[in-house]
Image (cartoon, rainbow, N blue to C red; front, top):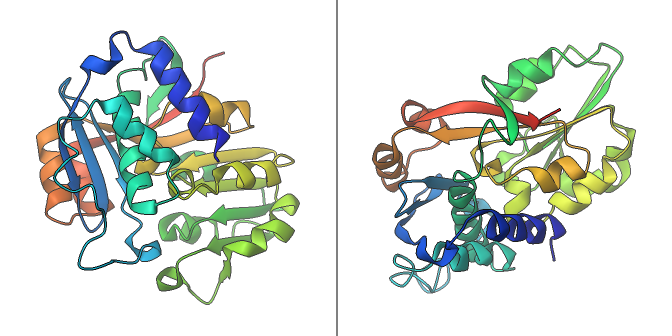
Length: 262
């Protein structure tokens, strides 16, 4: 069970009036991302995490053909599922609903690249942990800090510098700065990762998958969430349907950083 997901769902239900009138009108599962478009025009995405899934009998999800038209909140509750094919769709729906709540009245939101933000805050004496092999971030941090740990779950993303994600249990508490991939929300590791990181000076969660209402993350010590704001919903869905990844979705989104409002 993920308390982070439970709290996000509860906040969404409290924040959106007549929530059962908000429905999913498009649900697409591409090679790179899963996307959900709502009848309000909002879109949410989540990394497909295909590396962590096993196709069974020529299919990934047994719900195919029955998702579009569903109340969005019911689809978002799939984020609680231990079936990863359901969880990624649930997180995408949760992120779509969160677009209805993310506003500058509620949070401090600025456009920009999270990598630039974190690069300005690390120190040469720091031990930095990156949970998820985010290569652009790793390339920036390497050589800037005293020690860099990079944890990864998927064998296809292993490099000579990566450690298995099970090593988080021993090494995360050493970190001064921790950056966590948003996919940790979908695979249910986010709660434990943040618990292990509570001694860090700086904690960030980053990626298109990290687009949910951030309050449960802030409550657990996260200082900044770097994610996306879709600006061309139909273009974004088309890119996802055609197998696009992060580089391809850039024309259809803005990259934003979200902080608690002080």
